Image (tube, rainbow, N blue to C red):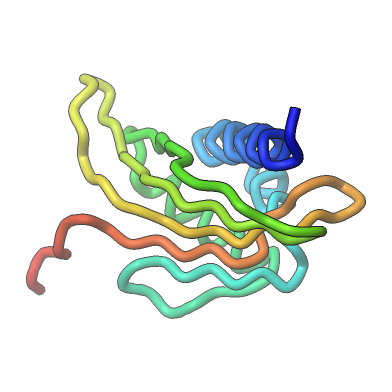
Length: 131
């Protein structure tokens, strides 16, 4: 198996854990998916950083319930202890309908505890409603 295949498998496993925790109840476990100096760029909001910023992001995800987050990885590349991932996101309602779609890029950092999100940027495919 090539190094690229192993990297992709590792990142996809980390993404599955992210989705499980994003749709779960433990904000502490969710925040621990991020590096201590992470930067998170959500649509329509100021940037947040670190694990406290990750908690803020987790709270934002929970505010979208009962919709659940689904992610699909499209590309993974990396070298050494850094990798980047490009993918798409979807918010799925309990009836299976799509509530929203978007795309994201994550820069991952390998730590002694495994791969963690270091830079996380996401964009919605739909425009926000006028206020």
